[in-house]
Length: 95
Image (cartoon, rainbow, N blue to C red; front, side):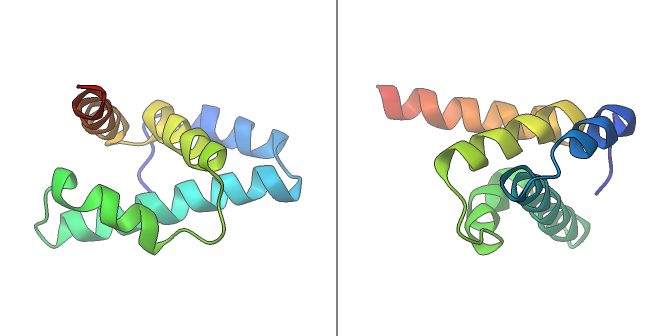
């Protein structure tokens, strides 16, 4: 997982060592790793982020998904692009 803000990520992860918090960080890392692997193979983030979010999910809640997405937005190299894709998707659903 390529981080743009490793210090924030490490500090937040260190504060979330309980099973629920740890699961959020594990999911965020697994999802980012899967998206990065797809990007390296030539995929566009827009084409894979949603599918991969389900493939790496292991009994996560909606809150956990949202928290992981927020962590990635703040810390991950492609986080802002992911956020914009999710935002556009939500706006289409609201119409």
